[in-house]
Length: 55
Image 1 (cartoon, rainbow, N blue to C red):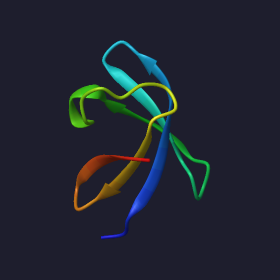
Image 2: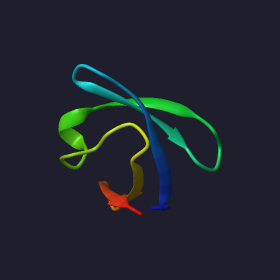
Image 3: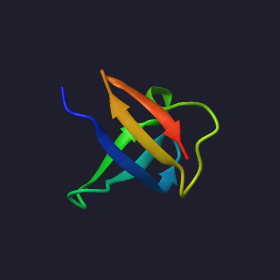
Image 4: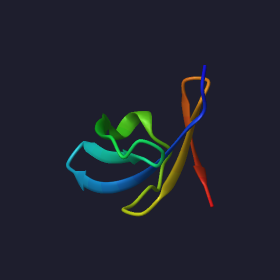
């Protein structure tokens, strides 16, 4: 499985909108699937079916 990088661009209730850094594609995902403490601008790495906050 490929590693993907995202940035949180918007949070609405129980969902976060994240943007793929490579393709520019925007998707929304349930907050419970993301690490605690994310906010707009948080950078994420998706690998092995898990999201991880990166610097």
